[in-house]
Length: 244
Image (cartoon, rainbow, N blue to C red; front, top):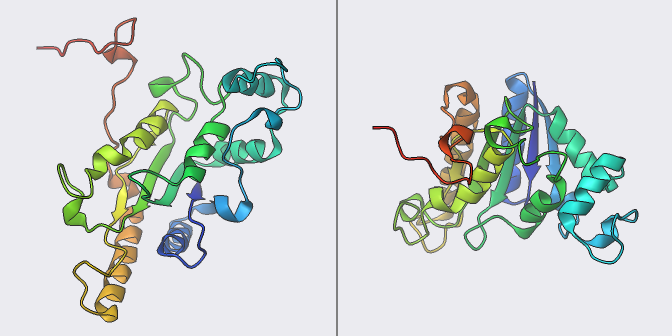
């Protein structure tokens, strides 16, 4: 079994890095081979642009999806993109590890989606959702937040975490993954919240790491999130009426 951890945090000593290390250790103990793709450390360029495609099908107007399809067909993908595609193809489990910034993922992770998930290669008009390229594989988000867990529910001050993660979850579903329930490490900034001293805050972080290991060890017990599939839409993509 193989897992790819896509790590998206610029600070090597941050709590996100500790969670990635914890996941690597736990997965290894579970019999996985764990590959860590550290986007910041690798210097991944998240900006899709024409300069990435020297052999363009249209030199005048840059259409990202057109050039991605052309590069896939010609086997001329940018080197960094091809490396990430190959790592994805080898992984039976994909984990996205990142902090919640401005109610979403860091820009480098969004740019990874833009550049690596190649149109015409990893998805097409018919090869998506429950017919997706990665059908039969699993994906899981592990996210950290400064806000405490109590503030992340529906109508909460920090925003509904399920709604905030929905775009990423839906994109993973779009690719065919079975999307497992996320792990949310809340309250990772101690000042201003409930922790009276450094020792109490350190104990909280230790508990989060232990919960993350337990979450991983129970992978087979998690029921995937439920999304609509082709059978739920009409020919225009509108939701069909629910059966009575």
